[in-house]
Image: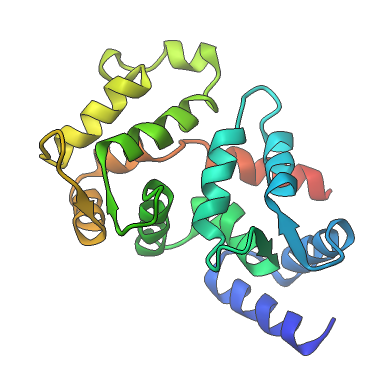
Amino acid sequence: MDGESNDVLEELKSNTRYTDEQLFAWYQTFMKECPSGQISREQFESIYASFFPDADPKAYAQHVFRSFDSNSDGTLDFKEYIVALHLTSSSKTFQKLEWAFALYDVDRNGTITKNEIHEIVKSIFNMISIEDQKNLPDDENTPEKRTEKIWDYFGKKENDKITEGEFIQGVMDNKNILRLIQFDEPQKVQDRLKEKKQ
């Protein structure tokens, strides 16, 4: 491993809850699967698909990929990849919300519209098994209802937009929004990662 890789691992260690061993194991697996040090959107999608064999995570994986492909070059490096898989579940709330905003800002123009919320919520619903969907409360058991509920929490009119500041403040002020905007099972990703790496 070169000095640059060590720097990346150090930085990841300080920003996530992972040990040297975990990060090093993931790094080795990553380099074996992606010798170029870059992972394509297709590869990322297939990794996500392997975590959720009983769902359809393709759309969600594409949105996650887009939100982390910070230089828009169509690939993620190891650091972006680890952050993409793990920020969703274990990082500090503020970082997580900055990422969530990027996830929902589909066209990357710095504001979120109701349509963008609907698009992401729809992709999240693809990840929830039909069985689990049946257990959702009546006012959020379809993507449309959940989108309405989120939009109402922000107190927005139909064609309004939400800025990043409003988004983060709104979620900080209202735990219900956080629950509604996220895919509730990052822990599943965690557990599957651990199983995969055994």
